[in-house]
Image (cartoon, one colour):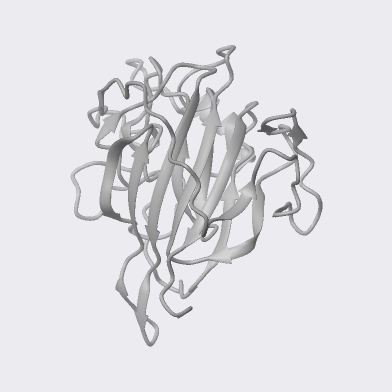
Length: 260
């Protein structure tokens, strides 16, 4: 969620007095009865994803992170990313900042694999935290949600601050996990959004969102909308939230029709 500058804020504010992580002073989400990051919102049911084998990369896919250690598909504000290649995975270098793909996408199938740190440090949003942002602004949360209570819309797989996953399909710390994200960008007529961005998400092969709408670009501790938002494409962003997260096997199939 948010930027790395929010880490200290989380450590101070994320727990309520009754040990239910979350907030009770944030706005109510439009159309819901829950507040943003509501401490009282029910957590998703835990399910066992089983022995899921990640999807094979289609021939039409654009490889953003393979096994050769080539990192040229990514940038950090126009510079080299500064993260660490470990021989078979890319590891966040805390404090260097978020990275973004040089290429922009609209409708797409995004596949990525991630691993939270094997050594458990901290709790709630301070534990194994990152996120993947479609078009640079629509976040699917990444978090160590294995036996780690946190607010429901900050759970691993949540549309951060908007919608929890249907279930918690997380594996344990240090285990490789996968996302397959089928993303549809917003549609417009003039300066009005006629269809919001939507995602269908498989977490370790388990369906956790089915054509779920984003209410707008991701925000922390606040509601969102599409006012002023008109983008047709944008980069894929991966967050540095201060944890030693690892990533591998990232590829994209462009699903835009006729390049519209």
